[in-house]
Image 1 (cartoon, rainbow, N blue to C red):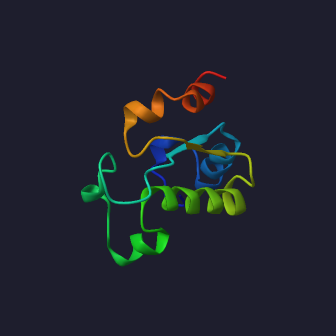
Image 2 (image 1 turned 120 degrees about the vertical axis):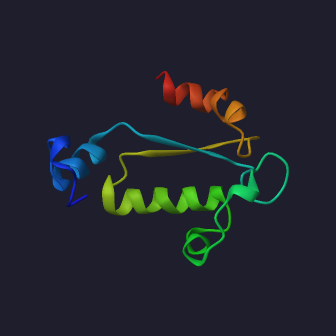
Length: 104
């Protein structure tokens, strides 16, 4: 963030401040936590750095939300775990949790 292109019209500090102030809700499928149908596991990165974030998307999303709360937005952003959904956009975005986040 400290070397943003000049055409963006702001520096890294301004970008971090705007991100921290934004109304952000992260949606994670509760079932996106293993191999299997609906999890798109073959598209998941398995390198060492990725594995340190967590074995599957749910765990990686939770780890990022924890980092975000501690270092970036200090608890302002929300993480919602969507029950009954894996890595399926149609399931996640049609859920009551997603509708509440998108249309408060």
